[in-house]
Length: 329
Image 1 (tube, rainbow, N blue to C red):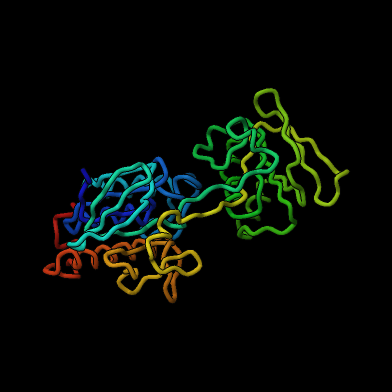
Image 2: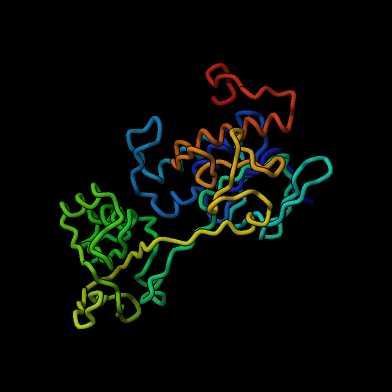
């Protein structure tokens, strides 16, 4: 038998989690689905220890702590979580409700859907020379920097994530080196300068050409770009490959929603062109769109309020100020 709910939120990142709270605040039942095995989206999977500086009310907050606070806030209204699965098929029922099947074979019926999937399902770009070492010294994410205590760490990449991992690991690792195939970096200049001040060793332009060890990683070879004779062997017990990732909206692309450059087009109500399907957060596109977590929170509230009215036309679009209600206490 299909599980029924008022709102199905696809995506358990910060925008989806705030949407879950806000749906409860409006008296709506909610199910939150995500392809990842735990809530938090990219924040929890990619930079749980990174400080975030543009969240209202926080001078700075760790990604992990932000997710924990959002979960605590949403828990007031007891949302249901379906994790480790994706929304697959969508069918409109005769009464306007939406029938969704998941990649795990579950069936759901929702009165409205809010797509808050960020960039969709993301897969890290592999380290060409190190795929067989994944889990034995090579990782793509760093959920717990403390696990790298006392190790010689090599971070690979030239973007913000690579430099952020250097900054996060420097206080606990024995040594941190950063290898990049170009002399120029895509990371923010302030972060680069901070890494240099901490005396993180930069190796450019080099690529990882070999990994060595007996069972677990013991050393890494890096080769200078366009100079195969220039090879360095580095003592190393851990490699963090921050080479970016590929994103896939998966089955959502077959739902008929209008898209531009892999983003979902919405109007000022955060409504898509598909009846009763809304979107919020980084996945959306409209004139003047700014992709910030802070913006996603407002979009989630807009989507939920408009969905509430579509579900029940007797409701007011404006719910009143939360300070006048005991519902969120």
